[in-house]
Image (cartoon, helix red, strand yellow):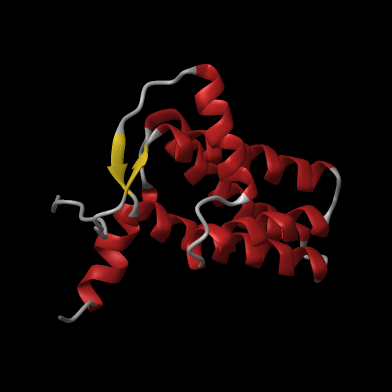
Length: 146
């Protein structure tokens, strides 16, 4: 197996914040399906957009995660921010697809895509495993030219 590579940057963040954010993402996806709400999926899509494409320090979910990490006094472990931005872009794409499938009333397809999103978020939350790095290595890096 070849080595896994992630996008890199000089920005560092506390690893605990994206892990708690991933838990919140899972809960929001579950709530969207339980409430049969495209609005909830739209809000999640907007949250991913903020994290993926803006310079804002926090999205609503990452702000809540940051406050939770601080309240629980979880240990600080600084990690590179770039892989989390790439993962947020993947999350944005999946959340947008789920929202569109909701609008089209294609609930089975929406559930499949949402299941993948929840699975990736679960890996991040439980194991600090960034599925985005694996996807980046095999599906983006081979096409990257300097």
